[in-house]
Structures are given as structure tokens and as C-alpha cells.
Amino acid sequence: MKLDILLGLQWGDEGKGKVVDVLTPRYDVIARFQGGPNAGHTLEFNGIKHVLHTIPSGIFHPQKINIIGNGVVIDPVVFQKEINKLEEMGIDPTQNLFISRKAHLILPTHKWIDAMLEIQKGEQNVGTTLKGIGPTYTDKTARSGFRVCDIITPDFLDKFSVIYKKHSDLLIKNGYNPNEDIETAFQTWFDSLQTLLRFKLIDSEYEINRYLKEGKKVLAEGAQGTLLDIDFGSYPFVTSSNTVAAGACTGLGVAPNQTKRVIGIVKAYCTRVGSGPFPTELFDETGEQLRKQGHEFGSTTGRPRRCGWLDLVALKYAIMINGITELVLTKADVMDNFDIVQICTQYQIGDELTNRFPAEITAEIKPVYKKMKGWKQNLSLEKDYQNLPREFKKYVAFIEMDTGVPITIVSTGPDRNETIIRK
Image (cartoon, rainbow, N blue to C red):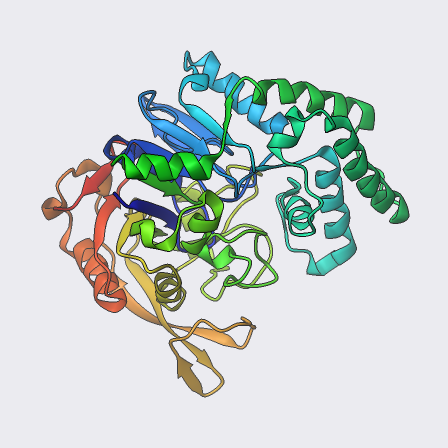
């Protein structure tokens, strides 16, 4: 049995949480492979909206195994809040949620360093979620991080003291004072470790490979999106982990030859939170209409998302990098009332046209659009793809033709039932 990978192909917020929830019945194991509480995976069913930040999106299926992999960074305080919400719903996550011993932990000082660095960058700030993600991954690559397995070692406090002193010295040197009580923040953090210790800590690389040998179906769940990848995204306005398919191998300890399907999630338009280039961004009434009708506000920060037309140059780049085998199209229903929809097919840079996503995106890039007639029909009322409006099916067919990848699932609303699986 091979491992399937599901990830976002834009700047995040593509609807991965819902799609994982819909696909979970097909799998035995759902495993998050990177990112941290900067992710916000939104699921909706039975009229209730749920937002997960660290926990895999298969958690609402109690018979399925959920794993937080070694590539994830965990804020135990945020994790505790997520667990409390699940338990208030009558869900016992201790029965089917397992945590990698090798996952790194976010300390309060990581979040303060994150805020300090953003202030120092001024107008060139990245627009991070201020959740301490970057500094935590920095400590990881600097070989001075603090892992889940460290909290159960005899020299736990010694390890903690080393990283705390390093962070404190840096904050003092730069004259940064956090906007919260330090003693209270760390007491809350230490208390939250007890919630982590209620869960089974595993060598996730061994367990996942064992599941595959036993013939179990495993789905690797990504966070953020391809265009936020630390290597291949719109650097430096990116996240601090590898969000692409290759990140599933390092984030879970699975060899490349153990992977099979790579499912890419793409919105019918584009959005972005925070700073950074966005070639198809709309600054007019159309952009505002997308934001309002799509309820485009960050599930982690609440910040309004920047909105624009679908960018096929960026999408084909993401498909190439990830080896996408199939696409899932989400939030097309947001454009139900549009007379005209547009798709960027090329970039114009000076007098030249290009189909390549450049290493550096500048203001010189001008999107070249194809205009298409809107479908002017409520997509969420249909359950059969064949009954969807002809104009919408033309929109889908154009994306498939230009990318060379089939769209196998169409999401027509936020609820798990508002999903059309094409045969």
C-alpha cells in the first residue's frame, strides 16, 4: 500500500480541512506532516463550524487513526485548547490521536521573538501569524530546538533552561518586552504539557511505515500552500517549512517510493493573507465581492484575505513541483453571481509573455487574462456534476485542459455534504 498526499496549491486557505474530512472515510490513517498553529483547517458539518490548528482533520471520525508527525511544530497551549473543545463535544481524542516524539515544541519566547523580528523588518515584514512558527523552525535547523520527547527526559529542566536563556538574551539584547506577564505565560505553558502527556507519544516514522506494510491506507495532510513553501514559494514572504509533497517524506519519515496519489486543492479564485506579491490581486469592487461572498477572513488570525482571480501560471508551477495527480476545486460557489469570471493564463513582463512562475515576483508582472461567462446559478443546490450549469463546466474544462490534470472533486459549499465527487 502506498501513501497519498493532500496539500494546497496556492497561498493556503484552499479548503484542505474540509476535503480531508470528506476523504477520511476512504483511509485508515490521517497524518499531518508540517506547519503548526499558523494553519487553520475549517470543517463544517451538522450546521457547526470547527477550526483545527494542529490536530489532523480526520479527528471527527473516531474509528480513524490521526497522527501529528515529526515535521509539525506544536504549541502545547493551543493544542490544549483544541483538545478541550473536542472533549466538550463528547469526543475523546486520546483514543485515536498520536503524537511524534520528534515534533518540536513552540515556547512563549518563540512567539515574542516572532513579534520582535516583524517589528524590526518594518514595512518589509512578512505578515506572519505571530505564532512563533519561524523562530521554532529556526531553532530546529540550528540544532537547538526543544522536542516533544524532551519533556519526558530526566534532564528536561536543564534542556529547557538552555533554550530559555538563549531566547531571553536575544530579547533583552534587542530591548523587546512582551505584552504579557512572562511568569503567567510560562506557567500556562508548563501546565499545558500535561495535556500532551495524556496522549501516546510515538516514533511516527516506524508506525506509519508499519501501517503501510500492513496494507492500511494513509493520507498525509499538508498545511499552508505550495506558494508559501520555504524553498519554492514567493520568498521571503513564505512560511518556514516545506509545504510541498516532498515535505510529506521528511515530515513523516516515509520514502518517496512509498507515495502514490498527490491530491492538490485549489480555490476557483486566489486569496492571500499577510504581505507578499500577488499578481492577480484585485483592488476593486470585484475583489471586495469575492472577500464578502467567500467569507475570506483568516481562520487563525481573523485578518481579511486579499482576493484575486485564479492564476494558472502559479497553479501549473505548483502542479509541477508537487507531481499532482488530481485536483480538487473549492469555493466555486463564491462566484455564483458573477457575470464574468477571469483566469490568468500568462504573465507579461515588459514586452515578453511567460508561462513561468519567476523566482522573484515584482510589480512589473502583469497578468494576462482569459474572460469567461459566469454561470449565474447556485451550485450548492446540485449534487450531480452533470446537472451543473454549462458555463461552470466550461470553466472546469478549461482548467483541466490548461493544466493537464483532472478535477475529480468539486466543493460547492462549506459543509461536508456540499461536495460533488466526479465519476
